[in-house]
Length: 426
Ligand SMILES: Cc1ncc(COP(=O)(O)O)c(C=O)c1O
Image 1 (cartoon, rainbow, N blue to C red):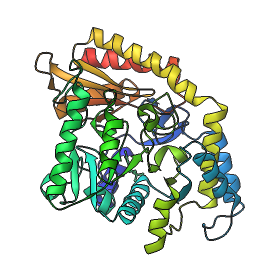
Image 2 (image 1 turned 30 degrees about the vertical axis):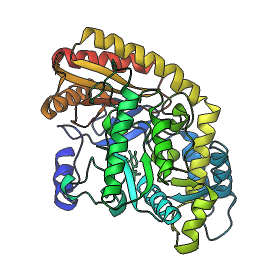
Image 3 (image 1 turned 180 degrees about the horizontal axis):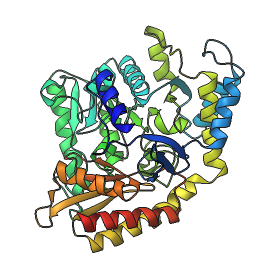
């Protein structure tokens, strides 16, 4: 069945699609942190942040079904659900961020954020980190160095060096790393201005997902945001990855760095599998767009999506998932460091909360990264042990571990044992 589905899929889906793992997985059911394939094999999901509160959470699916049976329309009619959702999320953001606009995907939310920043500042320049990913629209894809051809980068794009303390130019043993990464950013912004472009915004993913995840050196993010503001730019925090308790200490990832953004975007984890996303902004910033341009999103903020997103917040609050991300997260980190002590191919354990990356090396002295074939083999071996993981990193060298927020210590033990066995087989 899986073979014939693979053939039919290859015949009709666009060539951009690829599948995870050598043996394509044909998943048919999910429940909490578990997924089952068509052959009945159960897998521990140690990768998916989309089912943020677990696959098919009964409170979320009940809210979806209940609202779908009553009404689904759009934001041009009054509806309690979308207003309540905006109120609840804005209450979790800095008080200077006062309004919300809803979308269906993180790409749309970031696209809107960039449009707002450009309207408000009158400038076009966008600063992003190298190898970052911010979306698939024409605008956000061009601002996503991880996926966009380097030789086609627009002249309004300012590409910054990610603060990677294991693999970057300045490392964990350098006490001046923060200042040195900032100096590189200043150089890149100066180069943007030398090209005749002014800075409209910094688009920052505070987990540096596609690069790691990474944790930046103390003081770097605040100093970077100040530099952006000194040049008239706004700070947009893309919380598609770092938000919704993922990093363990706060609801939003940017809070770890003590910065106050002008715009915040979010997507995937808001709907635990349902497409809902949002752009939150200062009122004057959102007004600048409304004065000159247009925003309507037929499905963004519809009553069914709003019911789902409200239910996800209920689950996070009722089940104490922020505290769980911190508690299980620190247990996870310790276990990963234990694994690193047994397997020298693990060069670094990066990340925080329930989001970790293992930077895999084939040589301890040079830190030469695992090649793509080695990473693929490792992922396949771990999957054959019943655990789903992913890859990340600028060189594709990082084993990415980012389970649903409901992950507990017992599941950490299962994941660690599976990775341990896979590394022994490698
Ligand atoms: C940091 C970040 N921003 C934006 C996006 C785009 O979100 P979506 O796939 O919902 O459009 C992604 C998706 O992976 C992401 O990781």
